Length: 485
Image (cartoon, rainbow, N blue to C red; front, side, top):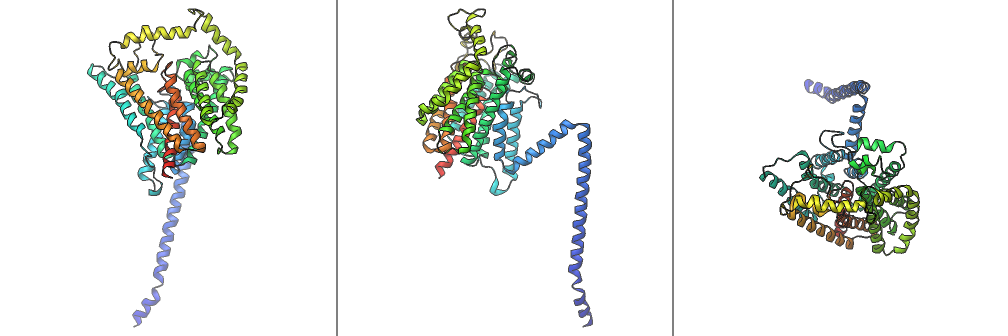
């Protein structure tokens, strides 16, 4: 009995001992964590003192990764903001082989896969809806990438680096489309992405205007870090290329975003606090597009804004909004316009009746590209244009596709464009408010790719193609959400 009594008295000591042991383990863990934090901070400080730029870049990248993993839709915001600013940068500038925008797409894809596999069950990323566009793209990819590769291998050719980039260019845009569909959860987020796209377009337009006016040495900076030949030509001629690198791409890109800004302005449900900014962005995009001094910009603005006005039944209101901006633009760009007209009608080789570039375009199509493709009409010549051609830039989308993949590729292209336009048009029946404005901008973007393809290959043109796929993703997601409701 005495032993039992002693055991009962000692019993309360057991929980006390467990608590003491637990407290000791926590103290040791906290001390270890604190020590690790101190040592890590010291190591980081030494590394930053020795190599500040890589260390700071690594810290910023880690913070961005954590920020994006917490909410994947932030990846869509980053994509919408950064791609127009870096899309024209030279290949290999940041990492070997890749352009910065391609690196961004791969990084976002990796984060989405990581979140989808390891994230919480209630917050995992979903693939998003599949439509006829996906099936039509599959056909386009087969005849635009797989068949040309097989034909090249059959002809005992070895794909060059340029061939590889051309074969994968379609897949790059489609991946960005699926990424946006996966991470943008609802119409509210889609509207935010559209707002970020508009903000980025205003920055792109502003950079183009500073480049045109030769301010802050920006034209020289662009020629250093952006690879397109037209960026270096802009050192001599007063024409804006901005961060896209090609004036045709810039004119179409800003025309699409001017249409998006106008459509949101005319949508009655657009937040009132957005309207002053939309007016400012509309003006900047119009001026920036015309600063390219190209027919592409005039057609893109005319078709884009005209279609918005017709679809919204606000032709008079849009004319009132756009006319003063266009008039002011022509006054501001008078020197550049005069320089361009002089080149077109009075430069060496000009006949004085037609613009000299139109004559060059026709000669290029008839005497350079057609002889190259006429013996390879079914399967095309090669994925990338041979450097042996006298002029490496086709003046027509269909001619470029004939060269790359022949009639099979051309047929798949027109089928794909028909499916995209028909599908986007059907989306408009489900949408209203700001989502309807985004859907109209998506339809206009793809229609411009088709129409402007008469003069240049716009299907994979930097900046413009990215915007068209992004708007299509936003419209597809909004239509799917509306259908579920």
